[in-house]
Length: 263
Length: 223
Image (cartoon, rainbow over all chains, first blue to last red; front, side, top):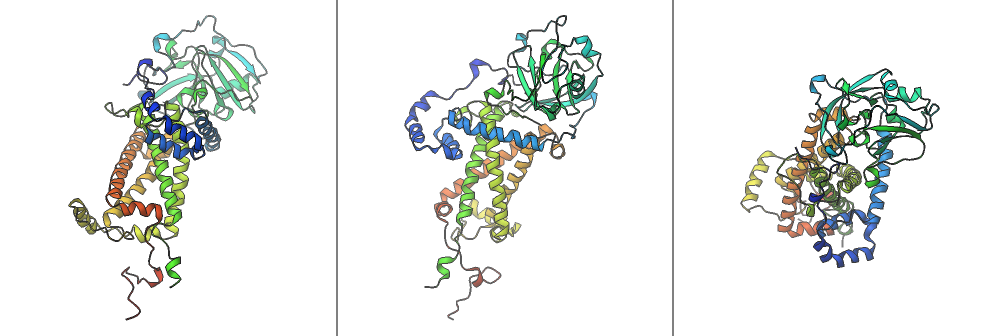
């Protein structure tokens, strides 16, 4: 199994564009710049392949690519069927323990102190009183056995349970017509999802895995598990939830990943 | 001079040439970015695509390119399919494909005895390759859709035998397209007039009205 991952980048092995190539092709790059060929950004893409350098990181190229990515957010929202259920699986297919993934290594996980943990609420919510773990665990529990799909391409089947997010949002008097829900992790990770996906029947605040409380490396005591988003849209070690109409972006989106990231 | 001489269509009309080169560029973007995406979770442990030949410094760039290129590839591809069917280009150039001719001409091609005088007529091997690659690209779009939206198109994922199986098929489709491109470009370089024809339009076609149904040259009316 490959441990190389952009979620856990091994700094030594990161490949950067060969500087000698950049120097050799500087004249070409400058000519390209002068001709303002960007408008034909596709042909630039082809030229970058031929030139052996990469223009993807250039500000104007990022401008075009991120605009298309934003457009794709809208397309995905239109494709999203809020009633369509993701396939579910039998318990014997469940992988135990779940697969670890974060933007750091597993031995760098800072466990949450469960005795003082509270779930904070903010934004367009009527009842902003924080929740203790006991109160969360006293709520009706829902179990989903769903496929976790990472943007990298790997997947596994996991068995998650905890309160249904729609029920929880209704209980706290959240404005269900708001656009976004943001989840803040204890590891300085933040991700946000659209309200339609938050209200999907297979979106839960998972506190248990395979019937046992989630353990430290996998997001104890609470993480998001939604069947309709890529893995990175499911923050772990959740400490706060915000309901908002202001586009909150997210950890990976700031680095250029697509925001909607729907399955 | 007869007017028809000036108005008759070229082998590759302008619209066709634009679609061909748009497709070529879109395909290169899809393949280069796809290789970078693949590198983050390889299917074959021995195969990592070198950074020098992929598109994207980081995986997020590759994903951005891939989901930009898909629009160009799909919209251009739909236009191409509609054009090929509506103008009769597919019916005229790509069909019928007779297995007997495919074998005979494949043998001739491999022994470098294949005649390539008439650009306006594709031999059976060419027909098979073109129809084959068009079919593979259609399947490639479908497997891509399955990987991109495995919940919204869960039926498609099942059709491909599951999520990882759809990924593998998407990879194999890429490999087949790359193989086609290698052969296609090599042959175009071996017979350069075919390459120039894709820029200039190539020879003018005889007026279809003067062609009998079997495609043989029209009898000379002066006799």
